[in-house]
Amino acid sequence: MSPAPAALSVILPAFNEEALLAGCVHQLHGALTALQVPAEIIIVNDGSRDRTAEIADQLARELPGVVAVHQANQGIGGAFRTGVQRATGEYLMLWPADMPAESADLAPYTAQFGRADVIVGVRQARLGYNPLMRFNAWLYPKLVATLFGLRLRDVNWIQAYRRSWFTRITLTQRGIPMLVEALVRLRDLGASFAEVDVAMKQRLGGVASASRFRVMWRTLTGVLSFWKLWRKERRS
Figure 1 (cartoon, one colour):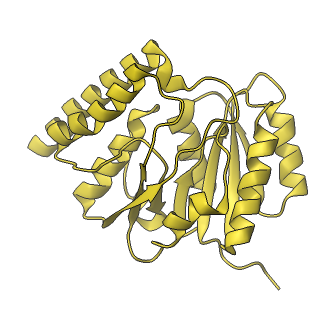
Figure 2 (cartoon, rainbow, N blue to C red; figure 1 turned 90 degrees about the vertical axis):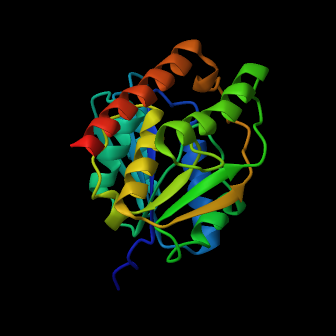
């Protein structure tokens, strides 16, 4: 008997994640199994220079429903787009390789399957954030609301997209601003939205990229670049 069609494709970009990848994928696989959600996990090795590729291939051999894809480094946005091309699930989700997963973390999203085209996770607390990061987390949704008229409580966390809608949009951003671009373009197409309250977990290791000033700057300039393109598209 062939396996049930995937309800969810979880795309996991991995760049030099040899220390965390196996633990994250095992936790994610266990959480999905506990929820009894037909799912696939697509690991996209994004040009890693450590043992990430080897570990990804081993996980694909060991765990049912896990697929390993390899590419040159294209950033989180490029890795996600590569994963989407391989995905078969009704819904798509991007999951960071440095974040633990429990069934309770995924249940708010899966509860909305079939009810909304875009499911937006809203963090109830920002664990591990310093004061500057907390200020940015407060300001960022307000900036997005001002620029695009998109009024959501959180625009930069785990989101799930119905694949039939997501494949209709073209993304220009490769990094963090990709999440905002996806939301804006799906809103403009007429997709339905649902916000779900979720808990933010402590990272499995390392330092959050959002704490780096160059990442903050790239995020700001990326959003403004997309805003200029979006306004030009609307005028034409």
